[in-house]
Length: 419
Ligand SMILES: Cc1cc2nc3c(=O)[nH]c(=O)nc-3n(C[C@H](O)[C@H](O)[C@H](O)COP(=O)(O)O)c2cc1C
Image: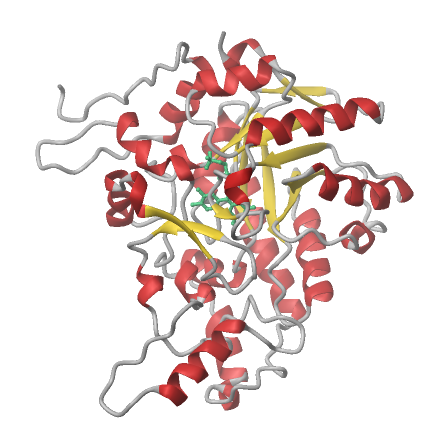
């Protein structure tokens, strides 16, 4: 039994049922998404911190322009005035997405992972611009993730592509799904696919900080499948989180999954955005290095390597330039934690900010090493070189291994040292 025996049906077309999940900030790069698209599957780019990502790719100056505009607020704890210019948000979004979709060469699709928890000190208006510009720019689909916003569909319902763009949601319980579905039914716009993300995924988790261990993907997946059946719907259900081998994936397909969404195995590929030295950290990780904590300012638990530099960060908040996680009214728990630490610091002591991390800067600089639970198994998937470092395989090899492998075997990439 292998994944290649199955196909994902979306509308009138069929795809290889492997979706590379969105990984912000720019870990799931254009190149990684295109690798899946080329092979007939689906790749995600993420719309987290798009202005910053554009500056890196195209040498634009979205971040420095915003920083200059709000320079007067640098030392202020009150960031309520630090807003995004909606024209600039749209421009960055369009530029990044057009750059990606214009390079498609295969029969697959490029989706956008839209992190709804990116509140940008103006949650609704910025989300609206992000979604609409993505549709204008020709994105094939939008996956609504991290922070279910029941009004999201309303923000785009008058867009000409509302019924043609694929829309999916990421949920971690039947309860969250049924709440979303009520609104979707009212708008006569049901999701085209449902990603069920279990507690072993990377990034933010849709569970409580203490209860994620009590849940497992297989149970939630089965419950969601039953719910969809009871409702008489035919929406592909796509499990995600901890699917490590092609056989894990094929088992879900045999049980009725429409496709699988995978990410961790692609974090160490040549195309993924993490710097090469960080990929080596992922490869060297042991199970005890992988922790779930509440350091993220979003209020959701997040999984990361305990070696993440952000866990020792005591940097000044950079909301003037970034500010992607400012809640409406300009609040962020890191700003509070930082100022509290400043006030409590004794003369001569280093500044230590406990509990919270500056996620905007940490993710932008690849200093927050968020990862899936199975990261400690990545060493099973590639070759060790004579100098002790690990080979960083092409994404195509990992994709094809998911598609064709059997009996839990993992095909290693061709050894560059010819062994
Ligand atoms: C490094 C990393 C970053 C991630 N970032 C995001 C993100 O920004 N938004 C999101 O919805 N999911 C994110 N995820 C979750 C993935 O899209 C995916 O659903 C999940 O990790 C799949 O499980 P696996 O990593 O065990 O294969 C991330 C996962 C990883 C490994």
